[in-house]
Image 1 (tube, rainbow, N blue to C red):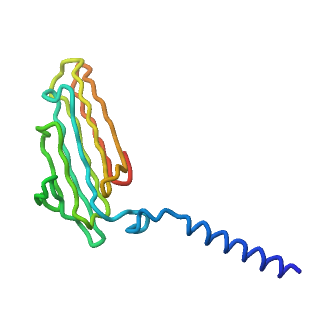
Image 2 (image 1 turned 180 degrees about the vertical axis):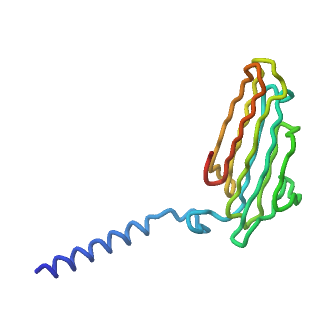
Image 3 (image 1 turned 90 degrees about the vertical axis):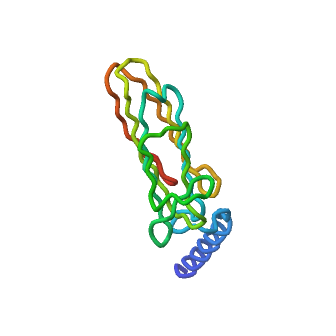
Length: 159
């Protein structure tokens, strides 16, 4: 009798498992160990007293074979990694080709003024295949001394 109950129970669990798997998210057909392949893109925007801060950035990415090539929004090749020594415009964008697997952006914001009350807002947004996956908003205000902070964001996590 125990064997029959165990067999029936096993069949029920198997059927339930199959039903749950068939209801899974089919929108991400290119998943690889939970990571989506495709175009990975990170956009960084700054606003406020931008002339009183330096924002430095480094972008890197991988595909399933190793380092991924990085491009600007116009499709111009930037290299296997890309760094911005001092963000001069209010917006910087970097993206992989179609075979991107993971992308990250690390940066720092440093005040160049010791005057109190200078403000900077940095917004970093990560996308995979045009869909927003992460967002990080950092706001800085000087307190009468040099301010320096680091930040990091990837297409899978925020730090």
